[in-house]
Image (tube, rainbow, N blue to C red; front, side, top):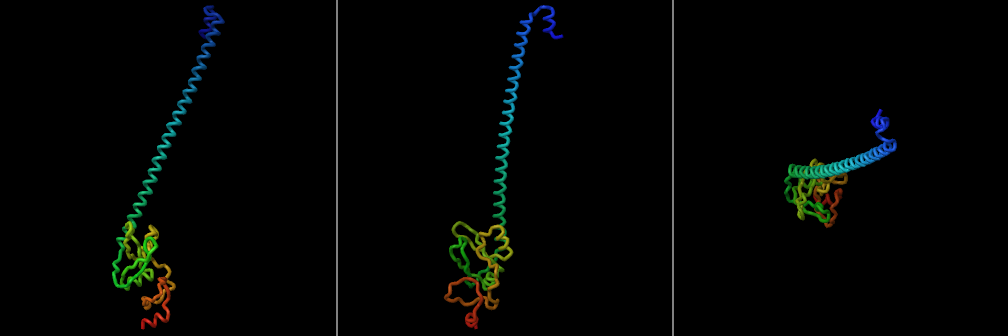
Length: 198
């Protein structure tokens, strides 16, 4: 038996007063429940805000990490290119004029190389790459293996490399005297060219 029922039984409290107290208690309970619900909603909103902030921070960290990885890969690639070029650079100075395109592709550049180097350049055993240094790139002769690695890492640096040697003349006809024809494409020597060598 509850305290209310005991007070009613002894006649200390009237039924009307007991109902009024019950209504007041019920209102206060509802009010507390309503506040509790609002408090839980506020806590849920706070949790959602904290989670959103953590997610945004995580995304920022991931974007920074990706940017650093891309920058590191770019730096490693540049170092690899420099290692390939400087580690395989050949000294080919000579008296034979050899023409190749410039790094920007708009001009022809003349190099003087040895006869052997010119023959190997013509046959694809050697190639030429540009080390871009602002407006005046340096052109370097490299062996085929280094040129092929450069084509994988930085193909824009390779300015000359012969891959198709099917239309070239025999080795003994490697250097035909220049004619007035300005065509720089590889071609097979003609009978007139051979007659000029004898």
